[in-house]
Length: 286
Image 1: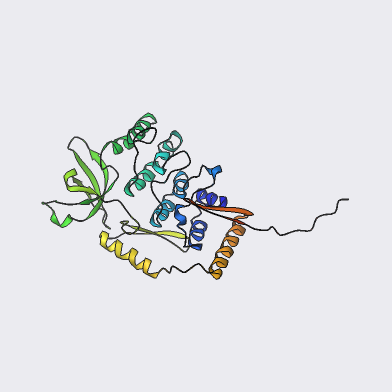
Image 2: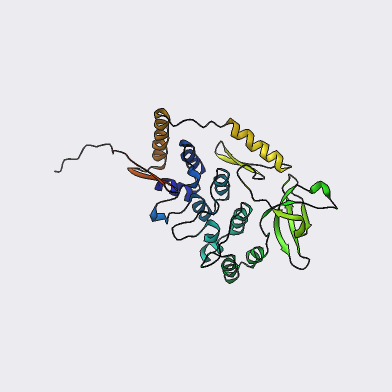
């Protein structure tokens, strides 16, 4: 991605980021990575480090890979289990968001669940250590085989806290009422969020974010499907390319930057564009 977009993400400039992502729908720009100077960090990682929860959600809804890694192999969630990030307010919300979207831990070296638990305890976040210490802590789940309240079977929830004394989870239903229940692990199975099944939906409209909650996951899926049907996926013609270039130029003007040599990097694809600078009159030396 161009450096000015990386800067926009780190500033939480949702409007500029979404404008750039939507300027060329032939690429999955939600998975763009920054330049080497920014440690080739995925867009999601940059938003996470900036503590922009809503921008993180928007990127995930647009298909950002929750397990994408930077140049040293750290995923967005692993990057949060570092001393500087664990000291920040709101880190728990960011970690829980990534967990609900299926963030993984990888065995060996410095990327395992055990390492993250150790870091959380070491740097004063025991509640996060306890969350990771349980199988379903922080995960989005589906309720099943609940004989006492069969009407809840098929409903989705988030496992907010593990209760070791009773071997149960305190969960919050994904409904408008957000009812809190205590359920056994035997009645819960993981159902990670996906762009088509996200549980709730964050929309950016008229310069602000709007969160849509639903009474069922089916209602949310229908809402997302309706939005997707309204979207057009045009063939990238010369006219479309010109519009994309114009949008980029307007964005640069707003940010007060000169993108004389911008790079777009999405996974293994790299697109490099060069723009000629307008020549100005040279001042005569006296």
